[in-house]
Image (tube, rainbow, N blue to C red; front, side, top):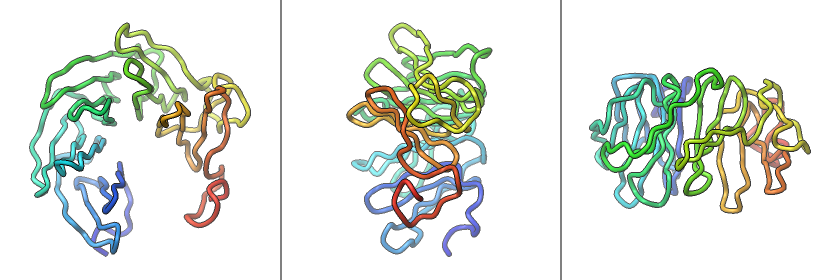
Length: 238
């Protein structure tokens, strides 16, 4: 064992070709994909907040930690980039340009687009009355951002150009997502992650399974089930 056992309170994780990195309590750990050995670690002031973005060409990692965003170099030395958030709950690359990333601030109820070290290109305060808790976000295209409301379970979308916000999926009811329903006629059960593939299919992580909303705008189960799963077996039975 090279990290705390049991691994409770893991807040975020990223998987690369040769290693896995994750946040646990105050510390970021990186372990070898081949043998599980510890490659390095670095600690931060808080055990709140999350968000991990890795740039392999420079072996550089961007980490969200409570009110700040840090840069970690290949020697596992950390320095802060910007400290103006209430609680960083997610960081996601915006496009292929290094250093452009979206930041979710769950406590302030806002999402921001940052460029480079600390240049704030865009910030969108969201209507507090309609947002429960923002848990994750991703870019859909060059103008549209998707983000998850965990407490009023929906996938919301926002235009960077106009600032307009609309509901893309979910009826706001806390229930397990329903297969074969239109995207606005399903609930979600505490959704925690959203992703978009190159064909514009949308994937939503909820509790023990992953739902898929295809380009026909209907919901299917992509992996897992409503029961606790196992790491072995077909994806729909895991």
